[in-house]
Length: 172
Ligand SMILES: CC(C)(COP(=O)(O)OP(=O)(O)OC[C@H]1O[C@@H](n2cnc3c(N)ncnc32)[C@H](O)[C@@H]1OP(=O)(O)O)[C@@H](O)C(=O)NCCC(=O)NCCS
Image (cartoon, rainbow, N blue to C red; front, side, top):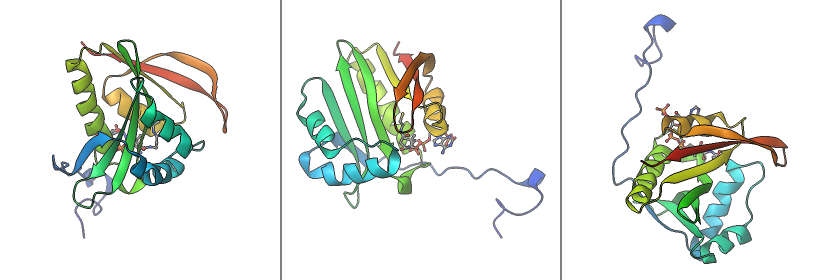
């Protein structure tokens, strides 16, 4: 029996997350060929998913949008996506999703750390995002990365209706 599940609750140890190999995935610009996989991840990730044409628009919306996919290095499968919007010298994270099969492995955190570090090197000083108050996983992820709550946008989301929490981080 696994030591993680046996014994009294007091003696149970938390399962340690395996460290993700550095070469588990690559991040690259999203292409038209990715859209089918991206849309599939989007559909299982959000109650109100972006449509394929929205992603297509992001691909062609230079220089405002930087859409990326996270690709499994071995089988080349798309396992996540992230969209950054450039607003002057600030960045808004407008979308991030990891395929359910690959969640809780540290990928979201690792991808964001990598991109935030690149943005900082590129001179970006401020990164913001909106998140549903009910999205505990995402809020915990952003908090772990030192994003702070800036405020609330009332009635921001539809289907289901919800306010948005605005979170942000200064890259200093
Ligand atoms: C939010 C999301 C991107 C996180 O990606 P992920 O790769 O699973 O996250 P990670 O494994 O890197 O987790 C990093 C940290 O985030 C937090 N976290 C992630 N998933 C969590 C969950 N289900 N419950 C609680 N905390 C969670 C934890 O603090 C975790 O750190 P820990 O493992 O040391 O506890 C993923 O759950 C997802 O795609 N959700 C659906 C789409 C979405 O909600 N996007 C955000 C829109 S604002």
